[in-house]
Image 1 (cartoon, rainbow, N blue to C red):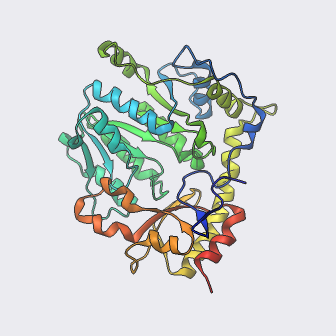
Image 2 (tube, helix red, strand yellow):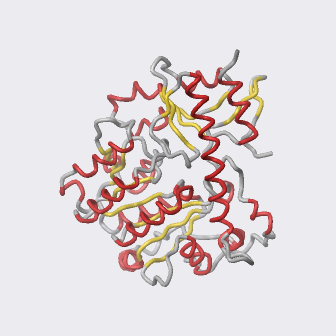
Length: 373
């Protein structure tokens, strides 16, 4: 049984949809690897062999301009280290869309002052499309030498807004900013994400990813970054000896990446095949979920049906998370994203929750808990 299917809490069956894992579970190809001796770690922190496999996965071939880095704390830890690099290189502030990954704020305050985390103002923070369009309205002085964090698709909505994000990437690059693209959920829409990754790398931006989401392996804590070698060379010139980057990959991590990202006997990459299969299943589950929410009077905000996260809204419920909990369903309140939102709007956040698409075997349980006779 997958760990988040059900658990008992206060004598009630709880369906935990607050996690952000793949509802299809872990990639079964992982069962084929043998657990190695974990006492040995990579001497080469740039881990060339698994790095090349990540490049091949994203069709970054015959490329000598980028480097793949690894971190042992997922994309969260990788993003933290990239912020350290970019701040050392002289980039000033970090800009992020409202209601995007809230832990970016933690990256900033660890390496700079809290005032250097900037929320991109939008007419409607609950519309990923409008929030992304707001980037195009920023003046040159707000872009030059600044970092722009873009989670793609946007967490918590699961919305991609691909064309608008692509326009934003060009606009930021043309005005002297740098893009930090987080594709934690991007594998579910592989071709769109691939196009965007190529665009970002062409602008000398940075891409971060993880095995926690689409591959269903959060416990592996493997995060990676695809970064310009020129940026790393510049960083090494100014790096202080005792300010070592936290870049490493255990032998277990190497084995997992080789297992999932190496072509099999019929030249398919297990990681890519699993994501294709997952996306089809998630799309079918989300179709059922749409009908359930319609029946229950809840509104789903903008999202891509291939992505297993979404935001649900209720005008008449001030604490929607508690409303779900009473019914035995655990979700994530958008109050957890308050640091990414202007304080004047904090009072609204309780009307919204983010939840994960239920698994196939739990969709009927979800329906029965939500729509009780």
